[in-house]
Length: 392
Image 1 (cartoon, helix red, strand yellow):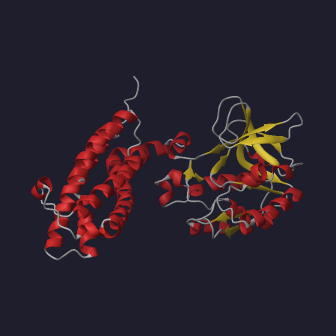
Image 2 (cartoon, helix red, strand yellow):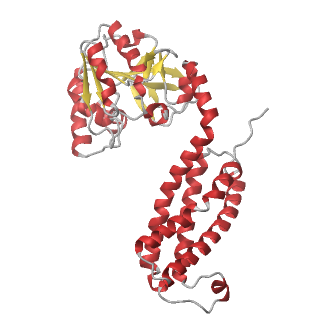
């Protein structure tokens, strides 16, 4: 299974597919292939999707290996990968390509029953955790983990009989019912558990290493520690600003949509009636309530969305949420007040001069949104979304 985008490994997986990332100079997927070869297994199918051309060398390097393209990889979960490979799962192992096999014996092709490789754990884990009865049959599985159970790893083997059942459910659950967000394991663990008598193949800790993020990669290959630390040290602030800009564009699209809806639909009638009986508005250069209300309400929506996204996505803040929110409210109140005045002031100017076309009004809104970035980025970066200092 090697079709997904490996987004938790960004930025490494922007150019290199995750299973092809080298760990101690060996691509992870080759660790899996080599372990299969040690056990005399040469009929291997690799399901690819994202950056599929990067896997083409495998067919030349390893005899008996075949690539299968998954055209659904961008819109569906990994149930789609097993669906496109469903003809090849009888008496077979199903594995993920982004792991390291340290103990090839766990892939012994002689097996008597279908089941998953797992390690017994008494400590709390957030990985999938299986419970078994006295006979060793799997009776339940928790997606969110727990304590005292068999921690599931993405190495499983399937008899001919059980493979036929899986193929049938792939046809119905994925193809017919279009359950595109399922993991393929959901079929046997949660959707139709009564159809399968699964058992556990016991492993020891370290027999398999699963790497889900860059921090875990650095633990098994110290060369990434230096390279990635240098990158973050040199470009950390640039990377934060890139993410800040991304969230800014996302929330800007939302804010622009809300503004257009308010300006040209909800408050359209108020854009035509001059308001001169309010001394404050008149002093500020605002004549039309429609512009003022549209700028005010759209800015509230935009900054609320921005706060939620930036706090965790961009700056990964862990400072006190109440203090952080209070500081944010203070900044936003001042910024929205500026946006409301500046936008309504410019709106009054363009309307009085006959330039209030849809394009000009929306470009004006865009300008009004960009200007506050001068102070909102540093405030969010260094005050509002700060992180706690590490304990001494």
